[in-house]
Length: 288
Image (cartoon, rainbow, N blue to C red; front, side, top):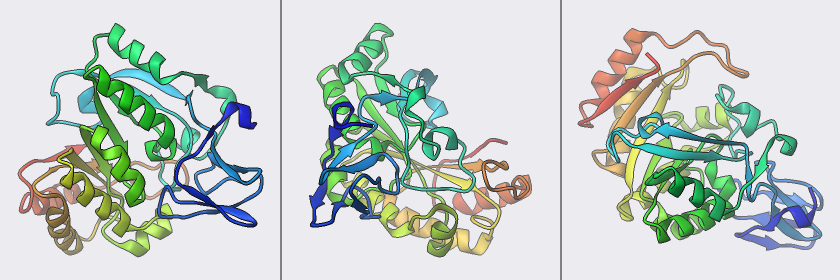
């Protein structure tokens, strides 16, 4: 994709033989004509460009509970938009066709103003940045959030939480609610299965709390990632310390993409729910 079809990215530094992307904790060193791990931020002649700016792969009107958000604007509909790319590579990804298989021929061009117009025409009071990982869609999300705020439209981020402190501090004042997907209680498993790390996600949760953003956390209960009941207990204690008494969604895993472990046992889900309820007032089961 050419410079003319892209937007210069925020949060990078130019070096002699590469650019250093500082959007997320990967801190990708990107050589000329290559992209970072997310596959949508490219070094073109020593500058970093966002290839997915104004490129929408999915747009729909959903019940807000589908995000899932159960304690924010309950009973309303929300405009959901997504693009391409992700800074994780989860082996069980549900949306791999837009997250890891990048094809710009299947996306449409929408400006922030056009997205706001769709929300207003349908009398929607909130927009969700979702489907793929919205933080790698950073420039478009930021512009759309600012435009939405002018029209008293709430902004919802459905994210893996893997974003560096400075860009998130810039975005956070425009975010009203978040659902953060926490992949595992173990950092080694986080890296092995998703190619990410736990601590940066916990840091994002802490920053969101300081900005008084409504947070709900989702834990996909994947065999081998979230099955040890004892470890779940200590992890929920850690989550409560970082986030406070937030809403927790425990979602059942089904085989998908490159991961074919059997679907999560319902009794295991119920056991983990019982442990989570020791730390959180609201713990919901999903996909059951």
